[in-house]
Image 1 (tube, one colour):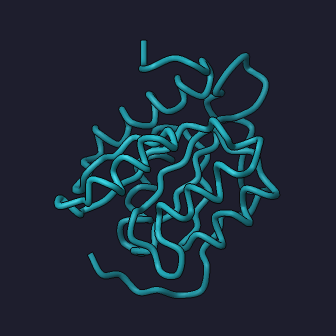
Image 2 (image 1 turned 90 degrees about the horizontal axis):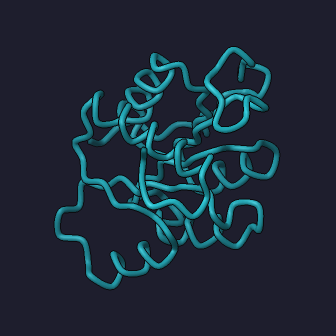
Image 3 (image 1 turned 135 degrees about the vertical axis):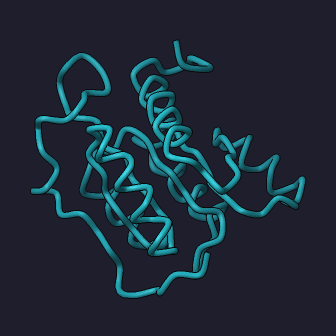
Length: 160
């Protein structure tokens, strides 16, 4: 998809309600960061996840996403591979360089079915799962459940 690339779109922290599902132990609401430059895809992902009861933070490029990570705590990240400026791989390297996000569950979403093996291996070594577009609503909901399960059970390899 080729959506407009406007100014960074971010969900303000005050909109992250406490009536959302929790990632673990009932302490904090689950928060999913979506870093996606395509306006339509970003909004569709957000709509599906919010309908499932998740709090969502939106960013349309790596820099905005990393700034959000500096001020918020997120439980999982959906990251587009092809972003303006820093691509998804470089963005993931920056995220992993931050100790508190060293092990946060990440799914890299791409429409690039001819993904270079080197890039694929690097993403995997950085602990990211790769998921190919299109992503249907039920698949996205399941991905979110799996990511939040992984966030609540570090070291696990999949959902219960």
